[in-house]
Image (cartoon, rainbow, N blue to C red; front, top):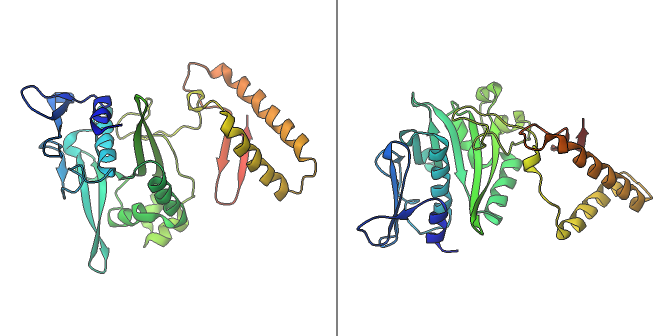
Length: 287
């Protein structure tokens, strides 16, 4: 897919009396422009930036930043509360740039977002987050007013923009930590994947939900072997001999419970059937 197709799916349209420029207007007439003649992204006068490296076409991640800013503005966050490439000192005369920073009206930090391209780059950053906190935990140590840390990716699939976010909700005791390791040790190691951009959430009002019916996805044929192999791993770990029969029974139970959740069709109710995963356990919860 071309970059023009990508931004047109975001709602950008050709600017009148201009060549190669696409624009999109938001609340109060605020406008972002993408210039294909100069390969520049103009975020307007209110969105602040401490560097210009994401305001061009030089790297694929820049389009993720653009889509993320678009999502923030559509959600209702004000452009004057968005800062791009916020620079933080990282020690030993080094510095790092956070892709997107969202502040409250009083200027205090609310949301720190690190953007990655879908696939290997996001997976690598997510593995780093789970291992030791990664860049996001380092940035948080520079400003502990933040309420939300987010690892974010998006891409165009067909005619739909899809996104993925892994979220760390800051608890009060995290603000008392002396360094990144201390913060990581206190963290419960259970990131959220909703609560910021979802339809039930208003700006600055984080509300994470467990799975809803709309979160479920159809099982594809290629998924079946992966599910079976993962289940076999659990059976081997627990020394279960009749693996085939055990798999059939538990899979039938899962299907019955999923069907039972049809009572929640057309609602945002949380499902009683959940998969909980942590550092040291994997378990299903049935209600």
